[in-house]
Length: 376
Image 1 (cartoon, rainbow, N blue to C red):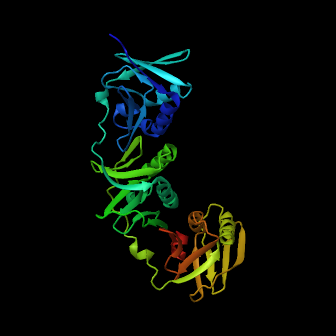
Image 2: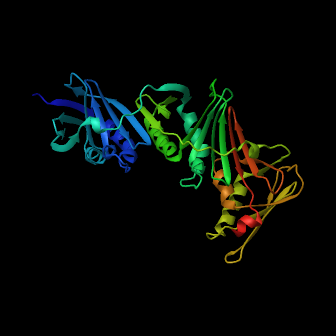
Image 3: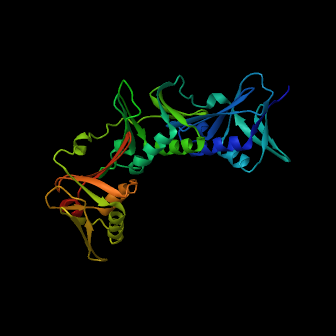
């Protein structure tokens, strides 16, 4: 019987297998998830990988193929990646009953294959909900993803809250001390939807999108999974079912007073304050007055800091408040303006930073530190 053969570009194949490595190398309860599913037809190669939480499907054109009907098989995802990444040019695959032969120039390799039926089925029938410019989606991820905790005791905090409504698309992340939110009024849904996307899915998706060179990304639903689709890929993720904290009240600026400070000077002050921490949780004291900000921090084991910064017309009364400097510094790196606009009201309420850019708004807030919290 004539063997099934097909030829693909090494570069195209390795790019796909690279994206699949974090998925196929994760341990699961199903042995077949260590494999990549190959589905080859006369003109197209489709590869699928899953770890039962996130899944990736990618397609690429074949250079040549003698198949008259689709052939499917499983091959170890890590092994085929490690072998093909060391090849160059066009790769010919020859599929036999129990193995696949890899031919490239003078190189001839062979890997065992398994039956495709062992592979967990991926969701089908995607219902596309929204279409976004890739640059906009990546920019929104960049504004908030840094704050998603990895192993918070509250499972809901380990995800990114995505809220789509008739007014805007909104992404929110919090670690319990700080909150970051980005809103884009360009993207809307007539019927409101809320999804809690796991942290891991956010970062894996971000890498895939950056490597895809697609100008547009679709967001859809499929079997209760959220799907992000490009021209050649579908990325599936299960959603967190835990309830995200009700954050709306803490973001209210009712009764707050506006002020502004030069970002570069403020960030440098926060860096110096953080340097004196030496791994300890010690709050920095901030004295806000109408025209100046007095910053003080003391670590008895290391040293002290006293600085004064100029404020742009802080409208509130004189306010002394304490913050953990790294919490402020973490979010302010995302702001690009030379001047930081902030809102304050009392020493029990957060400081809120805002930036507006055309149809996108970014908000970052940090909770103050009380003497009780610092003692703990």
